[in-house]
Image (cartoon, rainbow, N blue to C red; front, side):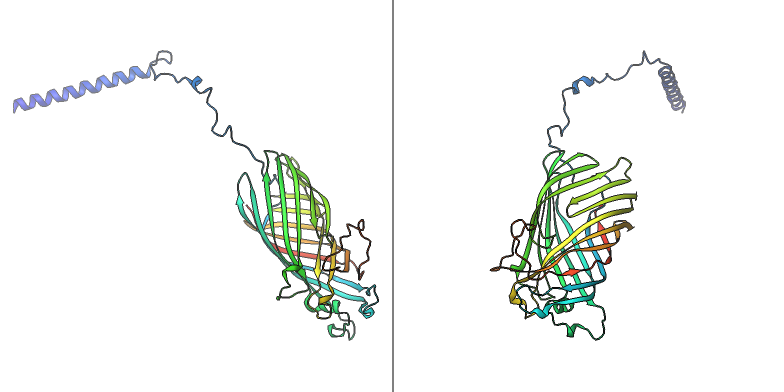
Length: 379
C-alpha cells in the first residue's frame, strides 16, 4: 500500500510539473515581440508573376441586352380594340362588279392577340429563339337602320363581317455576337394572313419576312445597328433599310427603344417594376381574300397597313408576370385591294418600280384604340 501511495504521489507531482512548464512557455510566447517571433517560412508571391488567368485566351462576347431595357416578353396574351370608324370601299377600276362600292360603313374592329418567344439556345456565343403568333381582327358593323350583314352586297365586306382577318405564323430570332462590342441580329417569320377561320388556307399563301442587322454595343447602356428588311408592314412587299437603336441614360430614368421604321419609343423608367413609353408602331400585312366563293379565285389580297401613335404603361403584377396597357390613335396608311398577276404579287417598291393601280383603293377614318395584355417576361 505504501508503495502504491508513493507511485501515486510521484505521478501527481509529474503532472503538476508538466502543467507549470506549459504555462510558462505559453506566457513566454505571448510576450514575444513581432520582430523576434518565429513563424512559418514567408510565401514568395513573385512565383505567380508569370501565371495568367484561366480565361485570358477566351474570346469575349457582347450581351444581347443593355441596362434598363424593358423586359422581353416570353408569352403574351392580349386584346385589341379599334373604333368606331368609317369604312369606305371603292369599286373595281376595271368596271367589273361596280356594285361592290360601299360607303360610310360604321365599323368596330377587335380581336385577341397571342405571341410567344421561347429560348432554344442561350449561350454567350449565340442566342436563338423560336416563337409563334396569332392575331385576329373581327369586324362588327354598327346598326344603321335596317342594314345588316345579310344586306351587304359587297362580297369583300361581307367576308370581313362574317370571317374577319387573321394572322398566324412562326418566327425566329438569332443573336450572334462577333466580339465584345459587335454583333449580328437576324429575324425571320412565315405568316398565313387572310379571311380564313379555323379551316386554314393552303400553304402557298404564306408570306415570308426577314431582317438582318449589323450592330455595335459600345457600352452597357447603348446598342445600335443598321440593316435591311424584307417586310409586309407597309401592307405590301418591300425591301427597306432599317435602323436599330437602344439607349439608357446614366441615371436609368430615360431611354429609347427604336427599330425604325417599324417602331420607335421613348422610355421613362419609374422603377424596376413600372415603365412608361411614348411613340409609334407600324403594323401591317397582306391578307388573302379566300373564304367567299365569289372572290376566292380572283387572286385578291388586302394590303393593310396602319400607324399607331400610342402611350404604353407596363408594370409587374407579381414577379415575372407583367401587364401592358396601351392607348392611342390609329392612322390608316393603306387598306387597298390588289390582284395578283399569274399568281404573283406586283412589286411596286413604293411606286418606284411599278405604278400599276390597285383594283380597289379604299379609305378608313382614324379611330382611337386601346390594347391590354398579360405577359410572362424573362428574368
